[in-house]
Image (cartoon, rainbow, N blue to C red; front, side, top):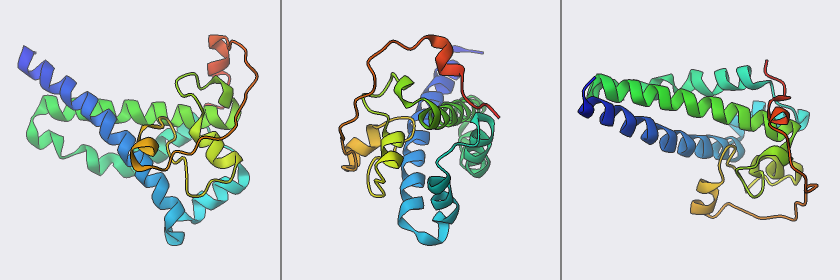
Length: 165
């Protein structure tokens, strides 16, 4: 692989992660705005549990496959980079979602686990980000709440003691 193809693949890989986080935010927000498409999501809120990382991942990837096709028309490296980036983000998002259901204190990359707070405080109009809070901050839907988890260090193994399937 030449340098130009590698740079193109990396550009589309990271672009896919940003794009995927944007889609995650808006998809979650739409589930709260439109009753017609949000029935299953409302049931999810009522149950207050994740399906497991594998099933969450599949739920995120299946509808987004169509969005992963256009970069292949740019070039093969662009398509591969975008495809890998989108799948990587879907896995991170599925993991983040499950972790926030089972062990939100372990979400070390966010000052406040927005998805946990979104559910726990019944914030139907705020904190739509699941794996990142960036888009909530950009679009003004980030709402900080008093969330004071026990201040302790979480061993790495606690990050993996969640339902995987």
